[in-house]
Length: 274
Ligand SMILES: Nc1ncnc2c1ncn2[C@@H]1O[C@H](COP(=O)(O)OP(=O)(O)O)[C@@H](O)[C@H]1O
Ligand SMILES: [Mg+2]
Image (cartoon, rainbow, N blue to C red; front, side, top):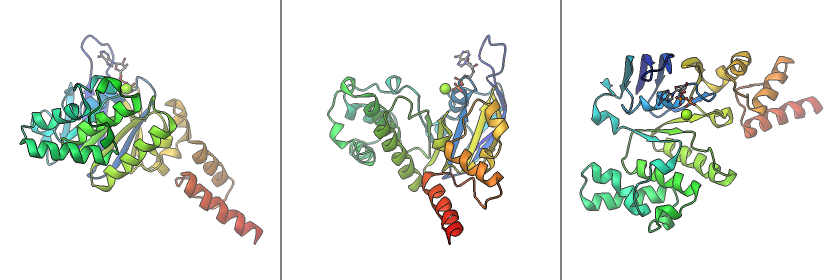
C-alpha cells in the first residue's frame, strides 16, 4: 500500500539529511505507528506521503505502484498535521469540512452527505454550525479530522494527534482511530508515546533520520537498549512484563495493554496459589 524505498531528504541549505535512507512498508488496512524523539524526522517522513515533500533520492510509492508525485495519489493520503490551527480554514465547522469535497468538485448533495457522515463518525454533529474560532483545542483536532474524512482517503496519517489533548479527548481520539481501522482505512500514527503503539500492526522507531528498527510491538519492545538510545520510554507495563519474562515466567511481553497484562498476571497468580 505504502512503500518508501531508500528515501533521502535534505532541506535546502541544511548540512544533514532529515531522512537518511528510509525503507518502510505499510500494508492496506494496517495500524502503523512511527515513534521517535523530537527532530528524528517523523514529520518530514509524513510530508512525503502526500507529495508535500519529494525525496532528494529514493522513491515513495502509494497504492498500486503510483509514485506519490502524482497528484491523484495525494488524495489517497489524508494528513492531520500536528497543529490543527493551520488546517482549519473555514469560518464555520460545516464550511471547513466542505472545503475538501468542494475541491474535489463533488456535486452539492454529495458534499452535504459527506459532511453529515464525517460529523457523525466523530460524534461532533452538534458542532456543525459553530464558528471555528470558538472551538477548543480538542474540538479543532476533531474538526480537522472530519475535514480529512470527508475527502474519503484510503490512508489517514496523524502527526502527534493526542499532543495537547486532555485525557478524555485523547481517549475519544483513540476510539476514532479504532473505528477508522474497523472501516478498512489504513492509519499511520506518529507519536512519541509508545503506549499509543501497543496495538499497532507495525511500529517504526526513528532516530536521526533513520528507521532504527521496525516490527510488531513485541519485536520492538524487546529492543530495550535501542529504544533507550532513541530516547523513547518503554511503556511501564511492557517493561514490567519484560522483566518478569527475564525471570523465567511464561509471559508474552508483547501483549502489554493493561487488559492483556491483567489477564496474564491473573493466570500466573492463580496458578501459583492453586
Ligand atoms: N523546514 C525546515 N528547514 C530545515 N530543516 C528542517 C525543517 N523542518 C525540519 N527540519 C529539520 O529536519 C529534522 C527532522 O525534523 P522533523 O521531521 O520535524 O522531526 P520530528 O517530527 O521527528 O520532530 C530536524 O533536524 C529539523 O530541525
Ligand atoms: Mg514532528
